[in-house]
Image 1: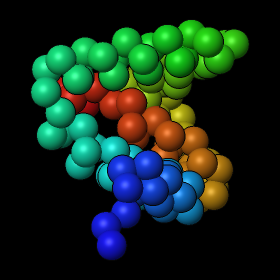
Image 2: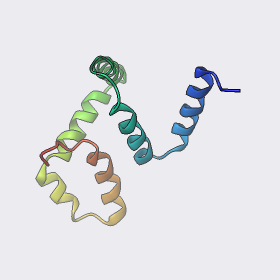
Image 3: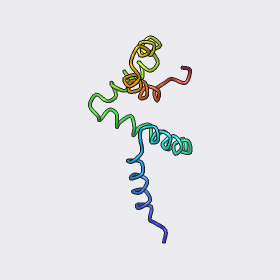
Image 4: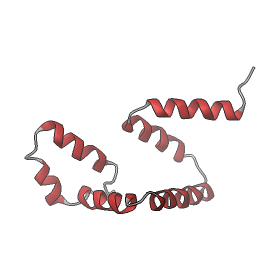
Length: 100
């Protein structure tokens, strides 16, 4: 028998929790590329409110985004050893402006 919508949603959430940040991002992008304009706007508002509700998260993300798009900051990372470089660079890749 076919699983209910609730069961399917629970299964997707369980898979999502098992994936790493890159896999989660790819899955989200694949799903979000298919939403309507109305759904996009709704999700934008939900996500913005979610960031605001997490104390300091919006400011942290905005600072990380500024760093991601700051050539001097990125150039400074070149002098890091590989592990710290990866831990600083990977979260910033998601926040690059399209022109960078």
